[in-house]
Length: 361
Image (cartoon, rainbow, N blue to C red):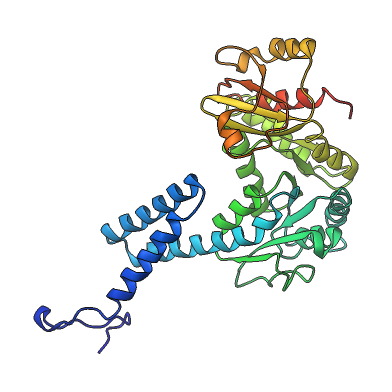
């Protein structure tokens, strides 16, 4: 006999035999323990154990089914996305945001298509939400081979666009927050075209992450149609309402550029990695990795210009540190180390621009 949830209804405790699956459960857990112990990475072992501890906590708290469904679905969606993106991790990627309502005859569609084609021509992959409008434009421009889609399932909109439908590089998601995580986490540059609430939400989320240091520094382009005023109007709102109230810093404008030229957008995205390659925290030291290190004169100039964001000491050339060597984390690249104040991320972006300025464009 079963109840409405499909679970077996229990009789008196004295008449209940041991669950038939208990041995299977114990065997599966033992096998899981062995699999985790066999992993070569101490970090992986620690994190898997932490995830199991979280599940145990949910059990102990008798978490409600509706909450478990959210956690289960979110984890499954992220695992699926990780599977798709893992073999692409070494490829440079640009995420394009924009309205699903944009029609193919709209200038914004043509801008997105041209931008995607230009970035694909430079060897980058293009990531979009996989739906219609600007998302389809990006994938049309990049071509199927260089496109990655992270689609949201909505009852009132069609599925994935024809440029990515049925492709193994397509992920289908139920939740906006898991989708947004993957669109932001996996890319090395971002382009936002005119759009509605969803597009603005994605753009503001990215700016928030860059401003607070929760996202790795990356180039961001607000791309308008030729002669358009969408982003200029938004910029005026910042200048007239937000900045005077002290709600954002003028230096935060370093996170993005506004342009209606595809060539300028492409130059911004590619130029960000002209010399700068990546960064990493090692303890309280921020490490910037680059292709060409500054000479003594250039290093002195960087220290003079950016002393305000260094808590103690100075910006200095360093070798790969022990945690970087342990992870084989681009140990061959020259490095700068600084004790960044973890506050002025707009100024940090300007420092990266200065590092890029060390080499010819």
